[in-house]
Image (cartoon, rainbow, N blue to C red; front, side, top):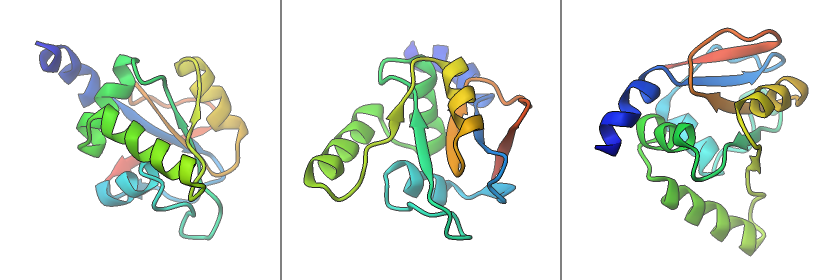
Length: 129
């Protein structure tokens, strides 16, 4: 039942980046590497700043499952393990999609996601390859 509820949301979910990031598209593997903190730099060596929604947010669950192919609890385990060991900084959690858009817009090298694949002022949308 939950999958049926999340499917329409996930189908239209958008990956957003700060307008200074030069990328136009991204592979699923690269997106997964960014969100599992394995890739910390864009191809031009600019640091990536990862923003996420709360673990219990339906958009977060849909993004994790449909775009990354991971369950949200597995992402949390990865982030906790890497941040507690000092190997990486955990993603920055925002309260809601409005704050997500504002923080991605204001942060050079930022990446985030929204429930809708829409154009937002000052933010670019990445296509999945």
